[in-house]
Image 1 (tube, rainbow, N blue to C red):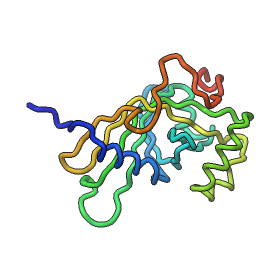
Image 2 (spheres, rainbow, N blue to C red):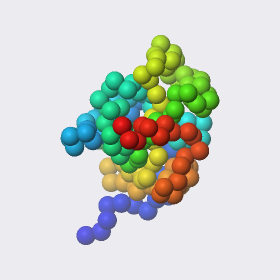
Image 3 (cartoon, one colour):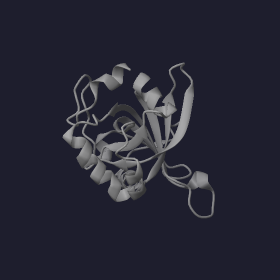
Image 4 (spheres, rainbow, N blue to C red):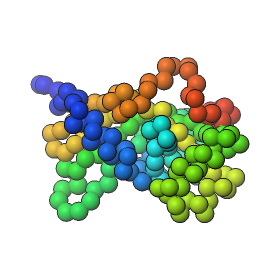
Length: 179
């Protein structure tokens, strides 16, 4: 049996980047501290460097789960209009999450950037329990419609791979990974 995954080409990369750039919401899948799965909808955007991000409350179960185990997955691409929603493009990302330190100078810059696409977040972006989760993508899976599946690397998504053990340039709250 041949693989259903097609060779990744420029059209697949362009579609994936289009989905990333236009998405304002995503489904976020996490593992809870007891090991169970949890999926939720989150506001979604990309940082100025193209890295996926969201703004979430420390009070949310998915935020607590990410602080316990940063492995996660994001599903991007909403079904729109008529027709079979399973024939519409969607992008799944496997990632690890880190939290931007609220006291860093980057937090204010990230807030201004995020608010351009999520103006209603102005109501809570400054609350003490809200932080930006930054997602380091390890791989992607693009389903461009029936029979059009592609495996993507971070480079395919315009993201520089981050070597194991390396720190991101964006300051991540180091206590977030040990909570």
